[in-house]
Length: 334
Image 1 (cartoon, rainbow, N blue to C red):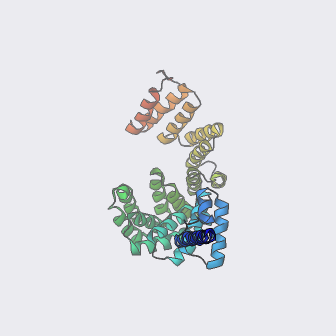
Image 2 (image 1 turned 180 degrees about the vertical axis):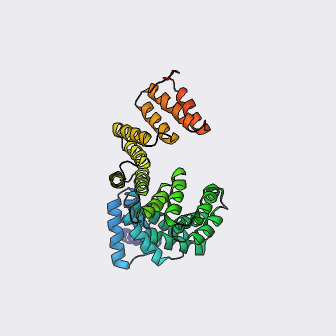
Image 3 (image 1 turned 135 degrees about the vertical axis):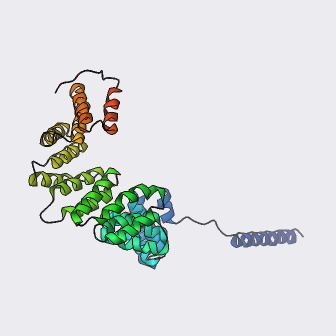
């Protein structure tokens, strides 16, 4: 009897174990995160890039994989590599407007002007994008003024681009390419649209013989973007050492790169070559002010106001100078 009960208990235990295993087998396991997802979450970009390349080698590129690789390279401050992967994604998903826009912006940042034109044109076939209209207008302004005018008119619907577009459109009627490019560049520089200004000034500087002022403006536009504008500035000075505008732009360049003594010398030369230019006097005043020479700063701010026939902009600079805590009003002499 005991043996029967023991045998019965064993059978029951085996049955319960079998039922338990059956339940476990029918319950899906929680998903195991892929090594790519783990590396991305842990901010291990190189490991993630390696996994992406392995997955692409095994199964081929997908748009998502290529976008992810591009995003990682962008985060690593390597925009050219990022673009190479986004281009793969764009070929696989040519109707992705966001990606096309991203590529257009990247081409502009990299000065790949012809590729930017292609991407902007593709984007505008799918979307009435005012940003794209404005950027395409700038790129066309030096080569196709008629098309540029159409793009600026469309961009002007957006308040963000209205003022600058209205300023640019009349310049497109200028008869010569150089005059049109220089005037366009100055307006873009005044609006601090430095990549666009660099493109336009670079075009003007490409004419033969070289235009020193265009070269100097190209260098300054590059400086403003954190690029190296020194070669263009030095070439401009070598071509036209007695050009007041070139010396003025050289002074701004030297200030941006932190050489205040050389900046002061260049601005002094600019003011000497063109003593009636209020902008040169005002910049010289600002340089003296940064150097702590308030007497000379006040003198040159007053010169700027006088030369400008009391232009409110230069009067405002003098007023701001007087508001400085360390400045006392004196009668300055040169």
